[in-house]
Image (cartoon, rainbow, N blue to C red; front, side, top):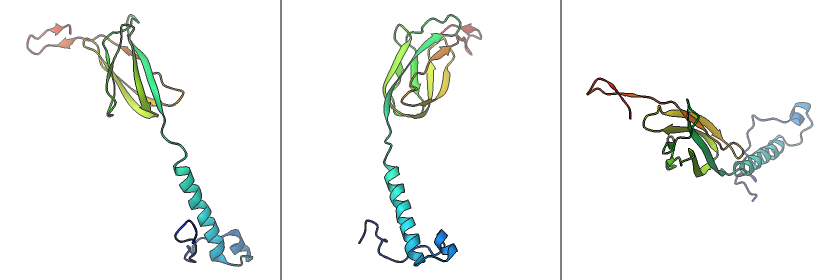
Length: 149
């Protein structure tokens, strides 16, 4: 018996034909289809495990849109994931230590600023996600005036 359970049987799809079938030179139609089928399945199985997901460090800076100054204490999240949120340092910088490559929505927020969301494709070479937050004021329904956060 071969590596595939069906390898020794002659139960291959009769609907698949080779060039030799069309030319009339095929000795055994089932044998020709069987070789092709086994090669395709082996290729599919070997390709399925070739590229494991990779983890990379993602980092960036959160700055004030108007002044360009760094924002300390902003929260950056990977939306909809189990990755824990991080907080920016005094230079407005943050780092996620390990995120698998893929497409993510990143959210940056801080009291007194409008929340920003960016969709990014994280690859082994593209790992920087910067934000510029705009100041905003909150409307108080209790007092009826704008209040700073």
